[in-house]
Length: 203
Image 1 (cartoon, rainbow, N blue to C red):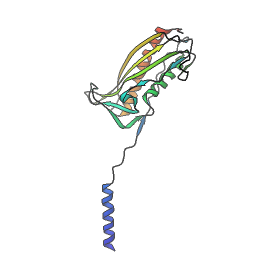
Image 2 (cartoon, helix red, strand yellow):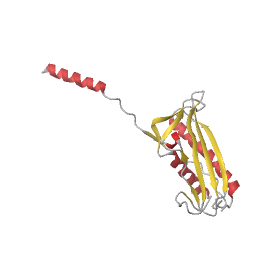
Image 3 (tube, helix red, strand yellow):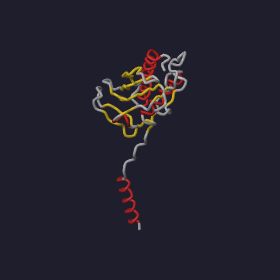
Image 4 (spheres, rainbow, N blue to C red):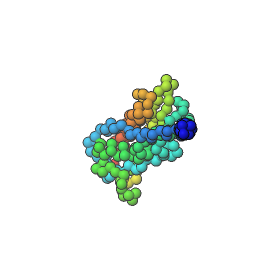
């Protein structure tokens, strides 16, 4: 009987040693709160402003965070267990809607008007959203966006490429996510300033 128990314990130990490794938990990241845009003294648009869903292709269309293997960001990979809380297309759309709404750019800033409704429109495309290593062992958050704005009658107001790069305060992913937030604040502030110059009281 004793020998039988020893054999069973041996089999249990062997099976335990051969068990699959524990799968890491997923970690989801939110951007930090944005820096408010300066309030407009009067709405820039007499009609509603629609911010459409940001376009994204390839690796930027997925929910996983992206990192570069080299400082030139020629080789990119996706993290397996580090994810955004939503797709970047939705995150950036909601962030820009909130900022433009709070700044009073238009009486109504939304994403819900039908395509047939006459309204000013903002369209964006994500071209870069990379965690890039630096020569000193740190990381930079690099963002590239194409942003276009059209007046309510379809007149093009601006169509620009915006790029911002901010250093992360630490080597952990949370520090890079905070740097993403600062880079987006810079880009959206530039876009708002361009919008002010090109579309004051535009239809």
